[in-house]
Length: 157
Image (cartoon, rainbow, N blue to C red; front, top):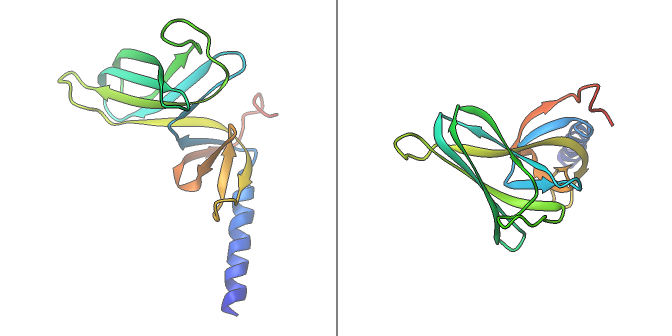
């Protein structure tokens, strides 16, 4: 009976995760997706006011392709827009890139700056032996999900 109970619990967990498909999720992520139109938004949560915030974008080989900075940024959600070009101005191909966010306050002390993504969950993968949401073609662990939202009527697809 214990085995039947475990199977029933696993099935219930899978059904619960499947209910997240079609929802908009905010999640911790070091990835940014450069769209086919050549733009991307890099989002993060800044824990305190910062004199400077930096986004260092690298390709799949770890090569830094672009750095973006903002100054005098207030604590809270922060968005940095990327035009899809590298440091020399060349247009980069669409796809997933890595991003590292850093921030410093007026005394040059590090400020916690957590990279986040927000997109529609399009599926669930059980390939790793536990459920992960499929978001922007990337698997996201449930422990990295920060918020779940109903899609707004204008964003439904």
